[in-house]
Image 1 (cartoon, rainbow, N blue to C red):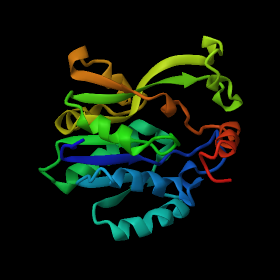
Image 2: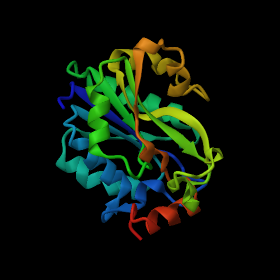
Image 3: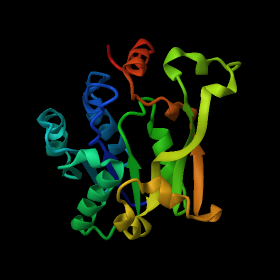
Image 4: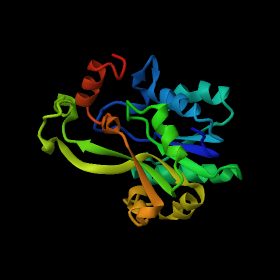
Length: 229
């Protein structure tokens, strides 16, 4: 699949308070997850990659220094107040992208780093879409670390709700228009709800339900071989 001229914003400034350790530094295939995800998205040949990280964690900054040195399109964006949440992190990523003044950028791929089964095929499918927003669709699992959801006969109560969310590809001009509204609890999902059905499409991928938020989920992911032990 051909991709349009695009940039990437990787939201990686979360404090991982429920997990108790930095998600950015969890190991996958021998390297920190923040590096693994950056390499994954490099395959899509973006004009630029903006990685938003917490300002006060030198270990995370150090982890991606080599990648940023090797690839001129990889940029680090420091978030001085990560506790403000994902909306502010995205605001900073957009700001850094705008400051590049790259007229070639038509779409922006926005993603996190803790969906451990995210793959290149899904990213390319998102980028191949033509709607204003092409988002990922999956279910929020209540307690996926106990393996219940792997059983197709499991009670439907295992699933909390359907999610339309990250990663997603969005029209760059629309994203810039929305930047000023990304404050407090008004994140991207809130803004997307205001679009008409013709302006958004969804690429469903059940595997994206597996994100790492708790020690139990981390243990299970390691048992499955999704992350290094």
